[in-house]
Image (cartoon, rainbow, N blue to C red; front, side, top):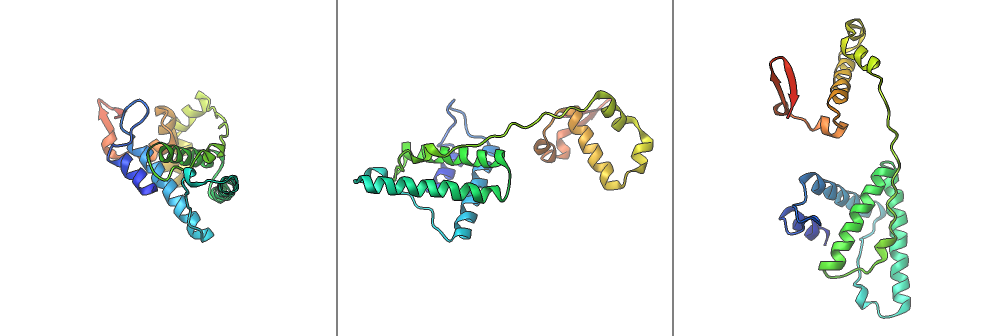
Amino acid sequence: MYQKFLDAMIKGERLQKNGHLIRKTTIRNYEGLQKNLEEYSLLKSKVIRMKDYESLNTTRARISEKNYWKRFYLSFTEFLYTKADDNYVGTQIKLLRAFFNYQNELMNPAPGNYYLRFYAIQEETPVLVLYPERLNFLIHNKEFEKKLPAHLKRHKDLFVFGCTTALRFSDLISLKPSNIERINNNVYVT
């Protein structure tokens, strides 16, 4: 089921709410969720199952299904916390909720609304400020740079480049040489 969901995004059959195609980076996030679900399933020796809500005819069956998804949520988030922090876990849960929403609206089986109880945790990331004097020191102090081993020089350069371009770390590491242009002794990111 999840693979059909992914394929619909890749083929452009599933679009954003504004009608635009889903970006490749977003699809990679969904592929990461798929990997986590598979890893979780192997680790717990459980197949993640989904029942059609309409086929759950008794109150007992619906309560049982609700409890199944509650246990899954707690166990899956516990598994995710072994790998990362609140923001990553929250993002994975948001992606999982989007899958369930899609499944409910367009596919069979429709799992019902149990997934709405999946809480996507998000931690406020503190903003760290680097004073202009410190950045200037890192850029221009050649004596300091001479004392650094080669690997720290590269890290310093990457850090300074990130500070001066305001790119996130994930954006910096995905840059290719073709994204950097030199024009009249100036460097530009394209």
